[in-house]
Amino acid sequence: TAGITQAPTSQILAAGRSMTLRCTQDMRHNAMYWYRQDLGLGLRLIHYSNTAGTTGKGEVPDGYSVSRANTDDFPLTLASAVPSQTSVYFCASSEGQGSTDTQYFGPGTRLTVL
Amino acid sequence: GQNIDQPTEMTATEGAIVQINCTYQTSGFNGLFWYQQHAGEAPTFLSYNVLDGLEEKGRFSSFLSRSKGYSYLLLKELQMKDSASYLCAVKDSNYQLIWGAGTKLIIKP
Image 1 (tube, rainbow over the protein chains, first blue to last red):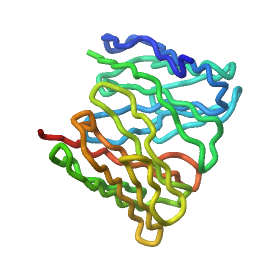
Image 2 (image 1 turned 90 degrees about the vertical axis):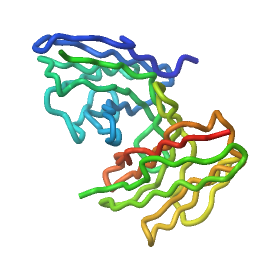
Image 3 (image 1 turned 30 degrees about the vertical axis):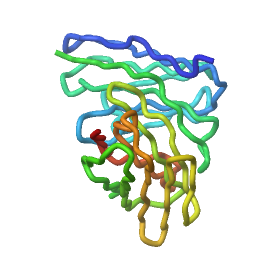
Image 4 (image 1 turned 120 degrees about the vertical axis):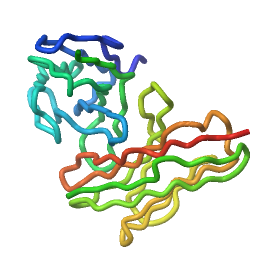
């Protein structure tokens, strides 16, 4: 199985432009997550969704929005990109959100905002 | 605030044993996870501890002491392919993962 796919692999974006990072999973997992990873920092949660139709804010949600129209897809949108959003973005999913539920990660999108 | 501490970098020799420590202070505890991340790749799951003690999985073992807010990952018979970053993460009272910055492990021949 493919697991989790993300697109694009990398992107250079002009400041002020909008962009949607795509994430699709084929494991029928209920919960999905968006993280950003910056040098010297741990993964930081941007938004999450515990089940289709619901979303929640993580630690660093400002400047980002998400939707969860169905189980498989969880796109992340930057409405007006700023240089501080330059980062590697990882999408993850887990069967549920309980203590034993393990998160599995997509390959990541490397975004540079100039 | 919530905090996960790990050493930034460690160096070890091929064939040896290395222990990577992780200390945490979180609002609630619902399990501790270790992930491996090779440069330029996604994190991949290694181990999970929720009760005190040692969990062994082949060459990798993970230990947890909840009273001390402490865990370690033990890697035995190190191989060059073990060169990677190792991420410690704790599930807090909201069942969200709080992540350490990771420990970069360099293996020398």
